[in-house]
Image (cartoon, rainbow, N blue to C red; front, side):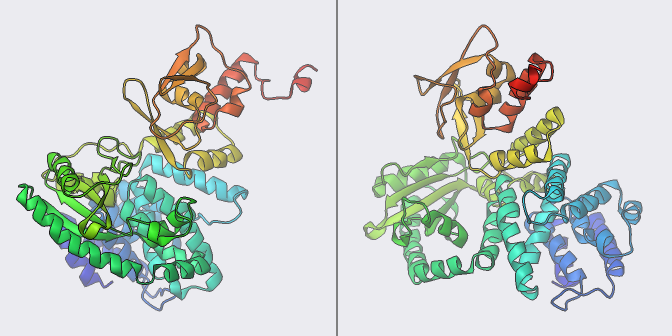
Length: 497
């Protein structure tokens, strides 16, 4: 992108004093990168501009973040230092640029490599300190993926795998659905070329045909909604991201058969308010027969990353299966941009629908606190990442309807510690959906769990085999260590000596 294009985009959303600061930052970065070229042959500053443009025009971040995006490669690739940035643009911008420089050291090699694991540790600590650092890094990775064709094949494959296995999951956990899909699709054909070719063959004609059908269904449904007095903000078809489609086809339920996928192109209905979401659902179900078991109310029960929407699948016009996603403009904005919406609201003022502080950062804080409490080794930290970050999440309910976010595979014991440390320490059993169970029982998404307490602490070494989350395991270890005077982790025959 050219400076003029980015500057014009920036002017649309920012105030005069912010625009002046942006101009100063561009001149500073252009001088620092003068004479540098990318592998494509473009001036290096084009990359910095693209990162800043995504942060400003798409995510609508605060000015400091956009400036930091513009300057993010200056300390590492030029003679200009962090001190120079701090002097000219202040401590906030300097802190973010320094954080992005640290995150740039992440390379997806052997997961047992100590340096790799330590860099991951720094990355997550940076997230807990200021999530904007990670948003800049995600914008940086996005543009690198868009221009990756100029790199050698081996490097392309490493970066693509890294994007799929590290950066796309981060975007997902931060509720940034659009960016996650974009990163995955940009990486898929490079990291897994044969699988990508297979999917392209499977999808031939299906995407186009699905788009045509949804376009026709849209007109019919829009008329039904108008007749019911429901005015929608927008109604459009949304094609499923290709990597997401590939992962879905691999599930046994679908048996690699693309004709079994109902949301290849889904109908997305954006309503004016919450009440119209449910009114729209009522109209759809009164006009078209819904498929049993295919209604998902993520408004009443949001996903752990904050995603809210109603999904339903009906036998639509012509009796064909159609998936519809119903949400308000607020929900749609947050589904696309996730945690970044928080800063957009601060920088540009509250939108007409208002705003509540998001909960997406809770898991970051938990991971930071776990490290602080236990001083966990690198090996333990990597194991925690595998369990608590890269696995799918489930929500479990207390009898009072409170929701706890846990990794897939978590047990009733993990749930007890997630509610409160004392509840975990005194747990002796669990009721799952009203039926007595064991602390070792693996929980399923949507379970209602009541922990049965004892009048004494019940912790034993066997619990380390039952607990799956780092939170529960660390608290069990702390208690065993205190109880055993620091020797509880050594084999019994050694402790007896």
